Image (cartoon, rainbow, N blue to C red; front, side, top):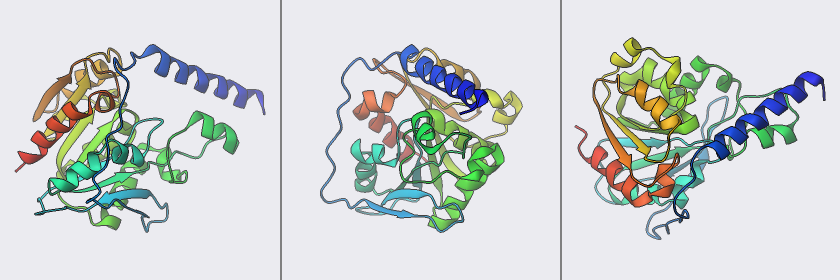
Length: 258
């Protein structure tokens, strides 16, 4: 390993330490909710040149107009939404929902080091499109086309903001709604850019997240059509710490979309 790679590795490990040690942890042990035996969770790969792994549920009862696409934060993947019961809940409420395994960008590191620095991306292989802002927006666009997802509400926690925000800024006219859970990368966009987005937006954050939540909230408040919900006694991954509360506010937002 060269000195340059070793330096990058050190910086990456330092960043992970600051992120996971510096942020407040959950006030209670995270509990995974049981799935619904009546709901079938499908899985597959998109047909694009950079195949993306996804999990999908179809409406169990009468189909709603909007469909939901769930992204994930660092160290998580699409299975998180199945374990949490979110996919099953949306199916029971009449929503088609798709959860993605976001691809990492190809790096300069050997595979073993890449797995250490970029864990949790599930079954999607690294993609060149993930290396740029425009590429990440196009990647989501291709997924929507491949899976024929329409009238979509995009749910974006934490690190997935690197994908969701470029798409929101460029293609917000395709979105019926946007759910922001302390996403990263908000500082990359101006007040004017956010103001131009008319998409109904739900901003959710944990009371104990004093870093990323506050930074993103400061920027996302410039979205003209937004509401804010603070989950008490929850940290950065507030949907994991308070899953029932999160599901209630998510469903209330979805059910009231035009």
